[in-house]
Length: 333
Image (tube, rainbow, N blue to C red; front, top):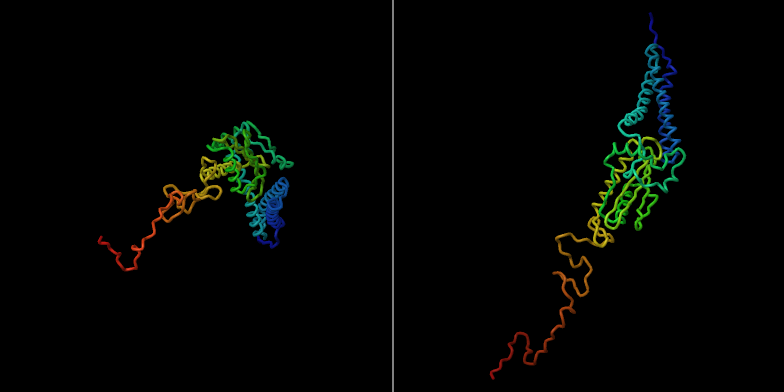
Protein backbone atom coordinates (compact mmCIF):
# COMPACT_ATOMS: atom_id res chain seq x y z
CA UNK A 1 0.00 0.00 0.00
CA UNK A 2 1.42 3.34 -1.04
CA UNK A 3 0.72 6.48 1.05
CA UNK A 4 0.49 9.61 -1.09
CA UNK A 5 0.69 13.09 0.43
CA UNK A 6 -1.38 15.66 -1.46
CA UNK A 7 0.07 19.16 -1.85
CA UNK A 8 -3.30 20.67 -2.62
CA UNK A 9 -4.76 22.81 0.20
CA UNK A 10 -8.40 21.90 0.88
CA UNK A 11 -10.95 24.65 0.46
CA UNK A 12 -12.08 24.15 4.06
CA UNK A 13 -8.59 25.02 5.32
CA UNK A 14 -8.47 28.19 3.22
CA UNK A 15 -11.88 29.33 4.37
CA UNK A 16 -11.03 28.65 8.01
CA UNK A 17 -8.37 31.35 8.10
CA UNK A 18 -10.38 33.68 5.90
CA UNK A 19 -13.48 33.54 8.06
CA UNK A 20 -11.51 33.94 11.28
CA UNK A 21 -9.65 37.02 10.08
CA UNK A 22 -12.82 38.46 8.56
CA UNK A 23 -14.63 38.17 11.91
CA UNK A 24 -11.85 40.11 13.62
CA UNK A 25 -12.08 42.85 11.00
CA UNK A 26 -15.85 43.15 11.37
CA UNK A 27 -15.64 43.38 15.17
CA UNK A 28 -12.88 46.01 15.13
CA UNK A 29 -14.78 48.03 12.53
CA UNK A 30 -17.93 48.00 14.64
CA UNK A 31 -16.03 49.09 17.74
CA UNK A 32 -14.19 51.85 15.87
CA UNK A 33 -17.27 53.28 14.20
CA UNK A 34 -19.29 53.18 17.42
CA UNK A 35 -16.56 54.67 19.62
CA UNK A 36 -15.24 57.35 17.28
CA UNK A 37 -18.09 58.18 14.87
CA UNK A 38 -21.01 57.41 17.24
CA UNK A 39 -22.55 54.71 15.11
CA UNK A 40 -26.05 53.82 16.43
CA UNK A 41 -25.66 51.31 19.22
CA UNK A 42 -28.17 48.77 17.80
CA UNK A 43 -26.23 48.72 14.51
CA UNK A 44 -22.95 48.17 16.34
CA UNK A 45 -24.50 45.34 18.36
CA UNK A 46 -25.74 43.64 15.20
CA UNK A 47 -22.29 43.89 13.60
CA UNK A 48 -20.64 42.47 16.72
CA UNK A 49 -23.11 39.58 16.80
CA UNK A 50 -22.40 38.87 13.13
CA UNK A 51 -18.65 38.90 13.83
CA UNK A 52 -19.04 36.32 16.60
CA UNK A 53 -21.23 34.17 14.37
CA UNK A 54 -18.56 34.21 11.66
CA UNK A 55 -15.92 33.31 14.26
CA UNK A 56 -18.01 30.32 15.32
CA UNK A 57 -18.34 29.24 11.71
CA UNK A 58 -14.54 29.52 11.32
CA UNK A 59 -14.00 27.20 14.30
CA UNK A 60 -16.39 24.59 12.90
CA UNK A 61 -14.79 24.86 9.48
CA UNK A 62 -11.36 24.48 11.04
CA UNK A 63 -12.35 21.29 12.86
CA UNK A 64 -13.67 19.83 9.60
CA UNK A 65 -10.50 20.83 7.73
CA UNK A 66 -8.29 19.37 10.45
CA UNK A 67 -10.04 16.00 10.26
CA UNK A 68 -9.69 15.95 6.47
CA UNK A 69 -5.99 16.82 6.63
CA UNK A 70 -5.48 14.06 9.19
CA UNK A 71 -7.15 11.47 6.96
CA UNK A 72 -5.87 12.55 3.54
CA UNK A 73 -2.53 14.00 4.60
CA UNK A 74 -3.10 17.14 2.56
CA UNK A 75 -1.49 20.55 3.11
CA UNK A 76 -3.02 23.53 4.84
CA UNK A 77 -2.18 22.76 8.48
CA UNK A 78 -0.87 26.30 9.11
CA UNK A 79 -4.08 27.87 7.81
CA UNK A 80 -6.20 25.63 10.02
CA UNK A 81 -4.12 26.34 13.12
CA UNK A 82 -4.27 30.11 12.56
CA UNK A 83 -8.00 30.02 11.92
CA UNK A 84 -8.71 27.95 15.03
CA UNK A 85 -6.59 30.14 17.30
CA UNK A 86 -8.17 33.37 16.03
CA UNK A 87 -11.70 31.97 16.10
CA UNK A 88 -11.41 30.53 19.62
CA UNK A 89 -9.88 33.79 20.87
CA UNK A 90 -12.81 35.69 19.39
CA UNK A 91 -15.31 33.45 21.15
CA UNK A 92 -13.61 33.75 24.54
CA UNK A 93 -15.11 37.19 25.25
CA UNK A 94 -18.78 36.13 24.98
CA UNK A 95 -18.01 32.94 26.92
CA UNK A 96 -16.56 34.97 29.82
CA UNK A 97 -19.57 37.29 29.75
CA UNK A 98 -21.92 34.33 29.74
CA UNK A 99 -20.22 32.95 32.85
CA UNK A 100 -20.81 36.31 34.57
CA UNK A 101 -24.55 36.07 34.03
CA UNK A 102 -24.89 33.54 36.85
CA UNK A 103 -22.87 35.59 39.35
CA UNK A 104 -24.60 38.92 38.77
CA UNK A 105 -28.30 39.83 38.64
CA UNK A 106 -29.93 40.43 35.27
CA UNK A 107 -30.63 44.14 35.81
CA UNK A 108 -29.56 47.31 34.03
CA UNK A 109 -30.86 50.03 36.37
CA UNK A 110 -29.40 50.69 39.86
CA UNK A 111 -30.50 53.30 42.41
CA UNK A 112 -30.13 54.12 46.10
CA UNK A 113 -33.86 54.89 46.37
CA UNK A 114 -35.91 52.09 44.82
CA UNK A 115 -39.19 53.64 46.04
CA UNK A 116 -38.75 57.05 44.38
CA UNK A 117 -35.57 56.92 42.27
CA UNK A 118 -34.12 60.09 40.70
CA UNK A 119 -35.80 60.68 37.35
CA UNK A 120 -34.24 61.10 33.93
CA UNK A 121 -35.72 64.28 32.49
CA UNK A 122 -33.36 65.65 29.87
CA UNK A 123 -31.76 62.29 29.14
CA UNK A 124 -35.15 60.76 28.32
CA UNK A 125 -34.99 62.35 24.88
CA UNK A 126 -31.49 60.96 24.28
CA UNK A 127 -32.72 57.35 24.19
CA UNK A 128 -33.57 56.34 20.68
CA UNK A 129 -35.37 53.33 19.20
CA UNK A 130 -34.37 50.03 20.75
CA UNK A 131 -33.07 51.66 23.94
CA UNK A 132 -34.23 50.78 27.46
CA UNK A 133 -37.05 52.80 28.96
CA UNK A 134 -36.25 55.57 31.42
CA UNK A 135 -38.92 54.45 33.91
CA UNK A 136 -37.56 52.41 36.81
CA UNK A 137 -38.63 48.73 36.40
CA UNK A 138 -39.85 48.52 40.01
CA UNK A 139 -39.98 45.70 42.55
CA UNK A 140 -38.18 42.94 40.58
CA UNK A 141 -35.11 45.12 40.08
CA UNK A 142 -35.25 46.43 43.64
CA UNK A 143 -35.28 42.90 45.07
CA UNK A 144 -32.42 41.75 42.86
CA UNK A 145 -30.37 44.85 43.66
CA UNK A 146 -30.90 44.45 47.41
CA UNK A 147 -29.62 40.88 47.29
CA UNK A 148 -26.59 41.60 45.08
CA UNK A 149 -25.59 45.13 46.14
CA UNK A 150 -26.70 45.78 49.75
CA UNK A 151 -23.98 48.41 50.18
CA UNK A 152 -25.61 50.87 47.79
CA UNK A 153 -27.43 53.18 50.21
CA UNK A 154 -28.18 56.94 50.21
CA UNK A 155 -25.52 59.32 51.48
CA UNK A 156 -26.58 61.44 54.48
CA UNK A 157 -24.28 64.44 54.88
CA UNK A 158 -24.23 67.00 57.70
CA UNK A 159 -23.97 69.99 55.38
CA UNK A 160 -26.42 72.23 53.66
CA UNK A 161 -28.07 70.99 50.50
CA UNK A 162 -26.56 73.88 48.50
CA UNK A 163 -23.02 73.03 49.54
CA UNK A 164 -23.55 69.30 49.06
CA UNK A 165 -24.90 69.97 45.58
CA UNK A 166 -21.69 71.79 44.65
CA UNK A 167 -19.58 68.95 46.03
CA UNK A 168 -21.52 66.34 44.05
CA UNK A 169 -21.25 68.32 40.81
CA UNK A 170 -17.51 68.73 41.33
CA UNK A 171 -17.16 64.99 41.98
CA UNK A 172 -18.89 64.14 38.69
CA UNK A 173 -16.64 66.52 36.79
CA UNK A 174 -13.54 65.01 38.33
CA UNK A 175 -14.72 61.60 37.15
CA UNK A 176 -14.86 62.97 33.57
CA UNK A 177 -18.63 62.58 33.30
CA UNK A 178 -20.56 64.89 30.98
CA UNK A 179 -23.18 66.86 32.91
CA UNK A 180 -26.23 67.67 30.76
CA UNK A 181 -28.54 69.03 33.46
CA UNK A 182 -27.72 70.88 36.67
CA UNK A 183 -30.55 72.35 38.74
CA UNK A 184 -29.43 73.47 42.22
CA UNK A 185 -31.83 73.13 45.17
CA UNK A 186 -34.19 76.04 45.80
CA UNK A 187 -36.05 76.21 49.07
CA UNK A 188 -37.68 72.87 49.72
CA UNK A 189 -37.21 71.69 46.12
CA UNK A 190 -34.31 69.22 45.81
CA UNK A 191 -31.45 69.72 43.40
CA UNK A 192 -31.00 67.46 40.37
CA UNK A 193 -28.04 66.52 38.19
CA UNK A 194 -28.02 64.38 35.05
CA UNK A 195 -24.81 63.14 33.47
CA UNK A 196 -23.57 60.73 30.81
CA UNK A 197 -20.57 58.40 30.82
CA UNK A 198 -19.19 56.28 27.99
CA UNK A 199 -17.41 52.97 28.45
CA UNK A 200 -13.72 53.12 27.65
CA UNK A 201 -13.39 50.53 24.87
CA UNK A 202 -16.80 49.89 23.36
CA UNK A 203 -18.16 53.40 23.92
CA UNK A 204 -21.60 52.45 25.26
CA UNK A 205 -23.60 55.30 26.80
CA UNK A 206 -24.79 55.01 30.41
CA UNK A 207 -26.95 57.61 32.17
CA UNK A 208 -26.55 58.96 35.72
CA UNK A 209 -29.10 60.90 37.77
CA UNK A 210 -28.42 62.50 41.17
CA UNK A 211 -30.89 64.07 43.61
CA UNK A 212 -29.76 66.28 46.52
CA UNK A 213 -32.43 67.03 49.14
CA UNK A 214 -32.27 68.54 52.61
CA UNK A 215 -32.07 71.87 54.37
CA UNK A 216 -29.46 74.26 55.73
CA UNK A 217 -28.08 71.75 58.24
CA UNK A 218 -28.17 68.31 56.57
CA UNK A 219 -28.70 66.81 53.15
CA UNK A 220 -29.28 63.46 51.46
CA UNK A 221 -27.81 62.30 48.15
CA UNK A 222 -29.58 59.67 46.03
CA UNK A 223 -27.94 58.19 42.93
CA UNK A 224 -29.16 56.28 39.91
CA UNK A 225 -27.17 54.67 37.10
CA UNK A 226 -28.82 52.95 34.13
CA UNK A 227 -27.66 51.39 30.87
CA UNK A 228 -29.25 52.63 27.67
CA UNK A 229 -28.97 49.28 25.91
CA UNK A 230 -28.90 45.67 27.00
CA UNK A 231 -30.76 43.62 29.60
CA UNK A 232 -27.64 42.88 31.65
CA UNK A 233 -25.14 45.50 32.80
CA UNK A 234 -22.60 42.94 34.10
CA UNK A 235 -22.23 44.93 37.32
CA UNK A 236 -21.06 48.07 35.53
CA UNK A 237 -23.71 50.39 37.05
CA UNK A 238 -23.03 49.25 40.61
CA UNK A 239 -19.31 49.83 40.18
CA UNK A 240 -19.98 53.30 38.73
CA UNK A 241 -22.13 54.28 41.71
CA UNK A 242 -19.39 53.13 44.09
CA UNK A 243 -16.88 55.31 42.24
CA UNK A 244 -19.18 58.32 42.49
CA UNK A 245 -19.72 57.76 46.22
CA UNK A 246 -16.00 57.43 46.87
CA UNK A 247 -15.31 60.64 44.97
CA UNK A 248 -18.04 62.50 46.89
CA UNK A 249 -16.56 61.37 50.20
CA UNK A 250 -13.10 62.42 49.01
CA UNK A 251 -14.35 65.88 48.09
CA UNK A 252 -16.12 66.21 51.45
CA UNK A 253 -12.96 65.30 53.31
CA UNK A 254 -10.99 67.83 51.28
CA UNK A 255 -13.35 70.69 52.20
CA UNK A 256 -14.15 72.00 55.68
CA UNK A 257 -17.33 74.06 56.13
CA UNK A 258 -17.19 77.31 58.15
CA UNK A 259 -19.79 79.18 60.14
CA UNK A 260 -20.05 81.83 57.41
CA UNK A 261 -20.75 79.24 54.74
CA UNK A 262 -17.32 79.44 53.14
CA UNK A 263 -15.22 76.35 52.53
CA UNK A 264 -11.60 75.62 53.27
CA UNK A 265 -10.04 73.59 50.46
CA UNK A 266 -6.53 72.13 50.69
CA UNK A 267 -5.19 74.93 52.90
CA UNK A 268 -6.91 77.77 51.02
CA UNK A 269 -10.26 79.38 51.54
CA UNK A 270 -12.60 79.61 48.59
CA UNK A 271 -11.80 83.03 47.16
CA UNK A 272 -7.99 82.66 47.34
CA UNK A 273 -7.71 83.84 50.94
CA UNK A 274 -4.92 82.38 52.98
CA UNK A 275 -5.83 79.91 55.69
CA UNK A 276 -3.53 79.92 58.74
CA UNK A 277 -2.46 76.66 60.32
CA UNK A 278 -3.32 75.97 63.93
CA UNK A 279 -0.68 76.66 66.53
CA UNK A 280 1.17 79.26 64.44
CA UNK A 281 0.96 83.00 64.87
CA UNK A 282 -0.06 85.11 61.94
CA UNK A 283 2.62 86.96 60.11
CA UNK A 284 1.62 90.65 60.19
CA UNK A 285 2.24 90.81 56.45
CA UNK A 286 0.03 87.80 55.68
CA UNK A 287 -3.30 89.52 56.30
CA UNK A 288 -4.94 92.89 56.00
CA UNK A 289 -4.14 95.30 58.82
CA UNK A 290 -6.89 96.54 61.04
CA UNK A 291 -7.49 100.25 61.30
CA UNK A 292 -4.92 101.73 63.62
CA UNK A 293 -2.30 98.95 63.27
CA UNK A 294 1.14 99.07 61.72
CA UNK A 295 3.43 96.21 60.80
CA UNK A 296 6.82 95.92 62.49
CA UNK A 297 9.48 93.21 62.56
CA UNK A 298 8.28 92.13 66.00
CA UNK A 299 4.61 92.04 65.15
CA UNK A 300 1.67 94.44 65.13
CA UNK A 301 1.95 97.76 66.90
CA UNK A 302 -0.71 100.41 67.47
CA UNK A 303 -0.55 103.50 65.33
CA UNK A 304 0.57 106.88 66.55
CA UNK A 305 -3.03 107.93 66.96
CA UNK A 306 -3.54 105.21 69.55
CA UNK A 307 -0.29 105.91 71.43
CA UNK A 308 -1.38 109.47 72.17
CA UNK A 309 0.37 112.78 71.51
CA UNK A 310 4.14 112.74 71.75
CA UNK A 311 5.76 114.93 74.45
CA UNK A 312 7.86 117.63 72.90
CA UNK A 313 11.08 118.53 74.79
CA UNK A 314 12.10 122.19 75.44
CA UNK A 315 15.03 123.50 73.41
CA UNK A 316 18.40 123.48 75.24
CA UNK A 317 19.63 126.75 76.78
CA UNK A 318 22.75 128.57 75.74
CA UNK A 319 24.73 127.12 78.68
CA UNK A 320 23.60 123.60 77.85
CA UNK A 321 24.90 123.87 74.36
CA UNK A 322 28.46 122.76 74.13
CA UNK A 323 30.89 121.68 71.59
CA UNK A 324 31.66 118.03 71.23
CA UNK A 325 34.17 116.80 73.81
CA UNK A 326 33.71 119.67 76.31
CA UNK A 327 32.22 119.52 79.80
CA UNK A 328 29.26 121.66 80.65
CA UNK A 329 29.98 124.79 82.70
CA UNK A 330 29.58 124.43 86.51
CA UNK A 331 28.18 127.07 88.84
CA UNK A 332 29.64 127.70 92.34
CA UNK A 333 26.98 130.01 93.56
